[in-house]
Image (cartoon, helix red, strand yellow):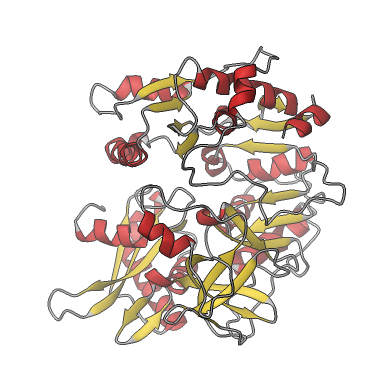
Length: 505
């Protein structure tokens, strides 16, 4: 990183856009390196942390988080990032934040002026975690210095880090090992939701060759463009569009996007070629794992599934979880196991679960340790296809159903009314006959709340046709109340428990 900062120096590394697409920050490689050095020195000195200590990072979307995170890495301090609590559900968000703080044992919180102002304005009515809060806004912005104390600390390693700081095994360098020299252009997801087309206008303005979004982001753009002039958008520069981020890739949404913008914004692919790169990743593998470089390749066994990886540079195994034996036959589902240098060391403070999840071994032992992803998958003609989370498998009447299949069908049934990525399916036990039945919980847009009865009927019919099981109960809840992980994945069990406890409305 030091060599890259020195070589690229004043070249722009990160550009931050506001809600109108205007630049609010441009950080060069040199600036990131120098500012992170200053903040790291400040963390070790003024704040009083030592290598191995934990710091909770609570930042609004923006460049300040990035500088603070790099500073923690350089200081040997374990960064524990959290989204700021949503003001509309502040109590619940603060309880979660305090649980994180208690679990990791952090005594310090790093933040920015936006979160600081929220904390000061709400602390009379709500209890924020009782830790020492420090604002890093602008720290080191005018300092070109690297400090001797920091240089010494960078050679130390924390006593018990959960993530190794290493080059991801899912990324490739060029032959010379030189830096890629890419410029990142970022903005808040809140800005995107308010105006999805600002994303495509940024792609057009900066002539981006690579971009990424969850599948519902492509859908939002297609929908917004239907009644908006997009003649100012030119997507002919794009080479790769990553999809399936955090959720199963839905090819119909991507093809719809490509078909529209190939005509109206010069996207160089109508969905029939290889511009889309469906991805698979998880936090336990530092997110990135693999991607499909040949576009939308459907499975012969399951035509509704598309490949999310081939030409692997990590060790991929499909395993019979019951006996830990590798499944070598094509098209045979099993648990996906991974082995690479990008596997994390474990879950904080949970050694037994960490051993079971992060240090699994095959039978017979091949000498490698594996990460158990908890995802059911199969390999077909050398390509990886993800079925669903094993723990979220729905069993009704002795038959297995994938929650993802139900959610995709439910979303497609009322696609103009359901909030994308906010549909969860799971089984619930009937209090009377103690049999399980299918339940679907989803958020709908404000303009659709008066049509819930008709929407529920359409949803139940479509799901029944698609997966062979009609939901007995369809629950519509307020926007921004469905529970997700920090990476955007649905927390189906938590949603079910909250529903049964009467906490979802």
